[in-house]
Image (cartoon, rainbow, N blue to C red; front, top):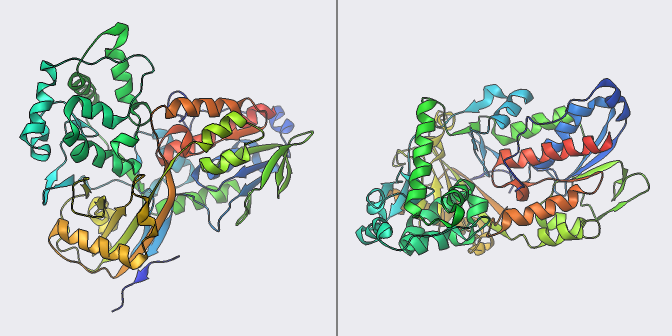
Length: 496
């Protein structure tokens, strides 16, 4: 489907900063005049690379943007419903990424930035909607009292009893899955009812599929700090210190500003603006068959010869292209596992019965097929002002890929049935759209960051070749965009 259906009747080191870059002199610009650069992959990483190249090199450069499918955006997609555009992939970004906010302003879309309503999200537990505890780190608690209403008294008691048991240790560079860590300290119930639902809403994986270092770097850093010199400690102490530090920071900044932001025009508006400014030669429905070195640069089949090349494709495609040029990187990227999911967007004529919440997460023991609902028209005032209601239902995880094989009408039925279980009211949408995200996200498992470091360095050593994409620097649109910016800057620096 290309439009809604009517119902009839890691990267290495610290997070990348888009603002970092190089300033070129007139002499350097002259040296770089007329460069031919190919960017393979038209997602946010590739578009960002093309945009940065144009901003830095000016009009003399020939930039080629090659996309295997018939649209740009990759895992970002904005769909036009009757009331207006709605994102059916990522819908928001962390506002603490001020570099990305500044990029949006530089592109000319500052007036499109929107903040959420601030309504809380909830969890569906034993047939009831309950608040997500505020004093946890992605569901990992600092004490039992704050989570007893979700996990039960016995599981809450085990959290509090941690300090009466054996302390834990953590060595530099150590890693384990988030699920294994939490289960060992607090038990399986805390993982299934709290940690996995919260992480699953971001990564489409359970806590057992995700590594601490790749998905919770703040926690990994704190564990290394507390475990330095062989010291032992308790997980509740680590969580408490992180949460207290965050609270102190909010108090210093008066707690101003929303955690997340979105775009009224949808991510499509950002992509279109960046492509207009990048002004590349765009090739749709063009899969790159191979790459190879020439005497003075690169040959990209079927596009021709180039001075430099940015690969900004998903990991499996990058692995194939790099097989002969960077075999170590290719092997790492070949081993990246992907999580798939499905989003069903539904526009309703009335918002009656839709809870006053931003959304609801559904745990492993929930009697539903859906893993989450986003009450988009409650969460985002600019969507709510259109009237009626807009709800997104999410299905599938890394361990549940079969939902992608279910036909549209069956998925819609699942969404309607599950929404009725959560809200107590059966609603019939006037429009719906099903978006399947095959391999939508890498599985950021144990040892993932270190593996990506190896892949990145292997490609980094090859002049005129750069790597970008969401597999490098973690989840989120700003992180993926930053890899494209960095790749462009690396290419420019190497060409000088």
